[in-house]
Image 1 (spheres, rainbow, N blue to C red):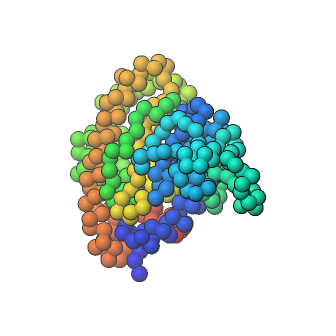
Image 2 (image 1 turned 45 degrees about the vertical axis):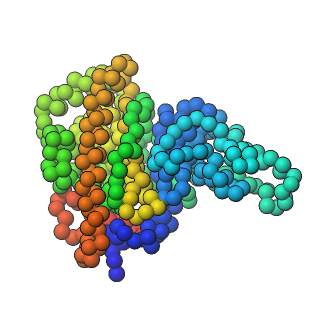
Image 3 (image 1 turned 30 degrees about the vertical axis):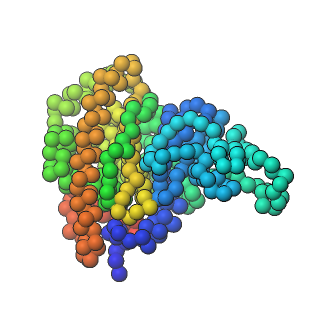
Length: 356
């Protein structure tokens, strides 16, 4: 029997992941700063449908971008992995419209009462951790329980974030979502894939720790020149921001990944499955943190964003190679020959097996 944790090609396993992982867990949708105004929205492509995070006159909702009448798309979208904008929730086909917590149905009296009674958007559950917006189809536990001991850290991080300064959907991950995610949680590949981009940080290990369904890794930096540079830059930001030295990252099982260096910026990467087991609906958003002056963004973030793009583009090349060999890899017994820098993958597989 194939080990599902290393099944990177099967549609059957993909369906089971949809039922056991996607439907039952909380997933990061957005930061409140991204949808501050009435009718602001973010759209995420997941599997073969879209989830909308929407500001309904100050009430944050999440719903499937499908009209509950005949299934037309409510907010037009060019099938992008990630998009955002401002607009009404209205079906252009028959005029069904949602606003202020109410679904407005034209010619309602023409419908059979039993068929229309209680009709609503295809809503998701929504919970906030500070300013981070999470959504879930049918959560098996509360968001606070899922985040465990890291709940307060995520809350503090969310209050440190100022705004989204970059969105990357151009780095194409032509691989199963598990391959794409595993690449981001192991450090063994760094000197070979990121020799000039990531390695200059001189990270001292990526030993993972876990609580509930979050795995965290904190790695000090050995490059004293970079440490001094970050220490100097930190003086430009508000002292109340959440701070931790070195490079640190969190994997919020199953699909979300949050990373930062010294708390001076945050990257939220989403490794959502697509409708093809050979591709990942990947997006990466970079967030600035609250600074003493807005001029800081132009000084600091431009170079940092370019470095992030370079790293992600390097990753896309190697995950594609992994996917190309995936059908053979599944015939191996198990992922038991890991190097110490790949221990995080083992922890990921343990969680995966627990819930699958």
